[in-house]
Every structure is written in structure tokens, then in C-alpha cells.
Image 1 (cartoon, helix red, strand yellow):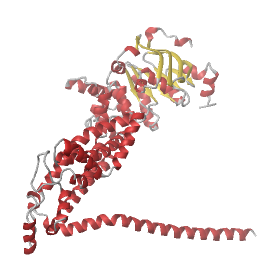
Image 2 (image 1 turned 180 degrees about the vertical axis):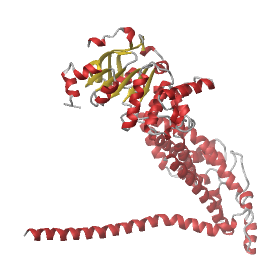
Image 3 (image 1 turned 180 degrees about the horizontal axis):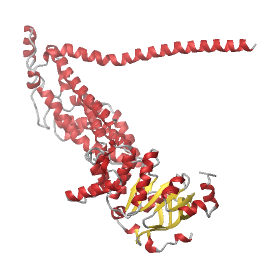
Image 4 (image 1 turned 60 degrees about the horizontal axis):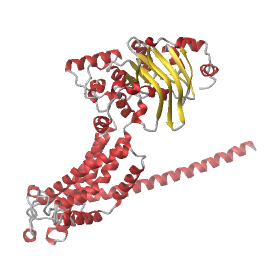
Length: 260
Length: 300
């Protein structure tokens, strides 16, 4: 695990002893510590129910929504305690993309991109608005496809386009980190490929954490990988090294398909 | 030996197939028969209403108040249409349904949202059960309650307010449950998308959930309206009726179904019964068709 002891200045996120319980004593994630490297794609993989999504959602405090869920430990974003930030500030800095594309059905494509500003009551000048919409849509390679239909509802796009729109919505805030929770699991192979290529481009500007149950996806696009099993972080390291030479027996068995 | 076995199998298969075929035909026939029985009342009602009621439908039907028995009798003897119309009923119905909606929509939608958000909590479950019970309370009982609360203590007499209060209680459970059901159909992920952008809770409800479910909310409200628009019993005990147009909510007021009941008790007014029923039926039918259109548009 040596290469993971990245210097603090390289780490955008530090996860320290994080545990999450859905109800008292029933832990879904136990004592996970990891430093997430800046401008890299970090994949979290593992079998269903291993706590990968739960860990991801602890990072931007989505668990705050559900009063039964208890989160322990500390998460530092650029050295600052995430628990002490306002949820709005934290989620401006940490964007999130979900398993199923979920553009707001009541908003146009353009409004979906700047939904974070609109819904939080941040007023933008018309020129600023247009600039953010164009840049965000260009970042996700959707601009050419939708530039003539910006005022139409986002729900009329194809699944892959909708998911890219959702990524654009997360990018509009210029976050530091983007969390993606199995973003391609409901998409066809072509749309999946587009999003994977997009993520590789986006890591120039953003730090990306990607939850996936698809090992080959992790192998294709991630720089670092975490393997989780039964709520525990079993192994964390450079993706290439982990796939070639896993240190833990469970990682080896998972990667070689002995269980899934 | 082998061939005889297959022969038996084949014939038995054939017989089975025959029996199934006949059963299928019988059941299809039954379903068609029963569905015709279901459809025929509405067709018969509408055709009867149109054939009996059309001759009274003219401009004065909508612009004049109810005639008195003497006028109607003279017109009947001369073989003319009955003069006057049911303007007092139309305005009364609009006034009372409007007042009832004014009370029922905000309260119903808010309670519906509360039940959707807190459906598993003990108190919410109790509210849900009571809402269901309220839905089953006979409308005349609601009229009685409104009589004791509003007629006796608030307006000190029969009034539009008392009538609309009874209608309000009838609309409430319908709007509450339809709001809750509408919100349940919106994927949780839409709500989470809002949270992931740091949007505060109340803004997610008012700027994402309500606009996303608007068509469902409107449909629920329209259906609740069409449900109460034809209510007669509670209005008899509360609004009483009035021969003139009344827009004062503290005074007795007429309504289309109330007029139908009054016409029924007057042998000279028979033609107006049919015309008023036709109008009421068309109103309810129109509201239902609009809601169906909204629903089918939403499903696209």
C-alpha cells in the first residue's frame, strides 16, 4: 500500500476511519481510510452490497438525508473537514452523478445544466449563464448535439445523452471532485464508451471517483483502484499493479472471477 | 405398442385443445357481454339526457334565473319551452366549488406531501388511515356536520360557505391521496439529484417535486372537483338554495344539483330537470376527459 501514502498536497480527499451504519451497529462500511489523488480516476469496485456506493455517498454527505444512517470518521477536502462545511458549499465542490440518468423532468436542457445555480438562488448574468451552459456541455461533448434544442426538455434525450447532461450539471459548479455511482450501468455499450472517454478527458481538470461493479471498466479507465468486500477496504493501489499482482487473496479471487 | 401410446396421447391432446378452445370462446363472450353491461349505462344516460334536455338549452338557460311555477305552467300549456334558466344554479355551483377548492387544494397538497415524505412514521400512518375513513363518510353526514359547525355557529343561517365547507371535506381525502400517489411516482433519484447539488429541502419540494408532478396534481384536483360538483345531499342541509343569483357567501345559495332536486318536486318543471342534468353531466364528463388527456400526455 506504499504508493497510496501520497503526499498530502497530492491528495484532494482524505478519508479517515470512515464507517457508515444503516441502523445502530449494522455497519455497511467499516473503518475505511484512503487518500484520493488529485486529477486521477479512482475506481471503487467490489461485489454487490460491499458498501462501495455507501462509501461514495458518505463523501458528499448524502447520508444526511436519512436520519437513521450514522456516519463516523472524518473526510477532509483539501485539508478542510467536510462535516464542518455547509452542505451547499460541500456539494458545490463535490459533484455527483447517479446510476440512472436523472435530469430534472420539469426543466429544459439549458436549465438542467445551471440547475445548481438556479435552485440555490445564485443569480447569474445572461452572459455568464450562456458561458457556463456552453462550457459544461462542451466538456461532456454534448454541445454539438443539443445546441439547437437547449430550450427543450432534457428528458427527450437518449439515455447516454441524459447521463452526459447529468455530468454537465455536476460540472457547471466547477467542482474539485466528481463522484460517479455506476454511471454506465443503465447504458448501452456505445454510450458507455463515450462516457468512459469523457471521464479520461475530464481528469485533466477534475478528480474523479467512480463506483463500478464492472472490473473491466475499472481496468480500462482508472488510475487507482479500491477493492471493497463486506464493508471493508481490502486493497487500494495503482490499478495496473492491482490487476497484475493483487496483494490480498480476496482481491485475487474477485479479479479472477472466483466470486462476484 | 409404441404407436398406440402416441395415438392415445395425440387424441387426448386434441380433446384437451378442443375443451380449451371452447372455454376460451365462452370466457371471451362473457367478458364482451359484461363489458357491454358496464358501458351501456353511460351511453343510455347521455342519449336520454340529450334527447330529453336539448330543447331547453338556449341562451336564456345560461343567462336567466329559474322561473316560477306559474310561468312554467303557462309555457307548458302553450307548448312553448319553459322561460328562464338556471343561472342561479350555475353561479352557485361555481362559487361553492371554487371556495371548496380554495380550502382543499393547499391543505390537501401539503398533507399529501407530508404523507409522501413521512409515510412510515406512526403519526403519518394514523393520518393516512383517517383520510381513508373520511373518504367513506356518507356525504349527507358531512352536510350535517357542516350544518352544526358552520350554519349554526358561523353564518347563523344557510349559506354558500356552509355548502362549500361540506364539499371541502369531501375533496380533502381525494386530493391528499392523489398528491401522495403522484409524488410516489417521481423517482427518488430526481430528489437525490437536487440534494447532490446542495439544494435545500423546501426548494426541492417546491421547485422540483411539485413542478415535476404538476400534471398529476392537477388531475387529482380535477377529479376531486368532478366528484363534488354533483353533490346534492350535503348542500340541501347547508346551502339550501335560492331563486336569485347570490354571490354573498353568508347567504343561501343555489347549485345545479339542488335545482334538479327542486325541479323534481315541481310537475311543471320536468323539462328543466333534463336540461340541468344534461349540463351537469357534460361538466363532469368534460372535467374527466381533460384529466384523461393530461394523464395520457404525461405518460408519453
